[in-house]
Amino acid sequence: MLVTHPHPDHVAGIATLVTSSDVPIVTLPSVERIMRAIEEPKRAQWTPVFKEEWIPKWTYPNRLVSDRDAVTFDGVTYRVLDMGAGGDCDANAMWMTETTPKAAFVGDLAFNGPHSYMADGKILAWLANLERGRALLEDVPAIYPGHGRPGPAGMLDRQREYLLAYCAAVKELADGRAMLSEPAKKELTARMQRLRPDAGLTFLIAQSADAVAAELAGTS
Image 1 (cartoon, one colour):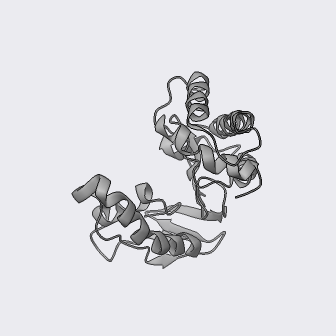
Image 2 (cartoon, helix red, strand yellow):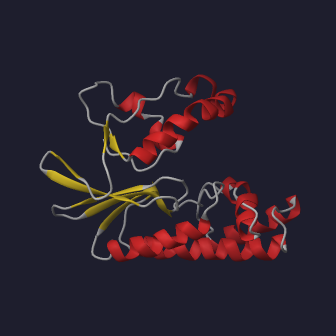
């Protein structure tokens, strides 16, 4: 199993998917470190919401690799790129196949369908990683995002357009402040829904507003 980043919706379920210690769970040290740091806070935050559905104990990676290292499973070689902060998380690994057909697993660098989770901030780093990723993935026909359908590298362009539109709207509505009022969040939600009328996870639009406003105001 290859792990792209440490968000609970991507790693908590490893405990259910992997039931044998013989199965390699591979990631970067930065991803594993954040997993360990957030497991207890996320359990405290979300157990009251999800109750018994919340995974009580996470299963951690048992093999750590460094930037540009390669691993091979069933005749397919995957190389990891350490993207650092800039996706929707502070640690991001991108896995690319070196055997044909080419494919890449980019985690939450791109959301291909739903609205984006941006509440952790670092949008400028995210935009920089999209530029870096676009160059690396130009000739990769199958890119698998953390959320949404697989597709070609054009999904990174659409993600960039989304981030820029979101930031422009937040900047206008915040008017220099580090947070948005509730009416401003409703207006932001309406604007982004008009931009992406078929996108799911609309609750994320308002949820991310204050983090992005704080970054744009230079206070995050």
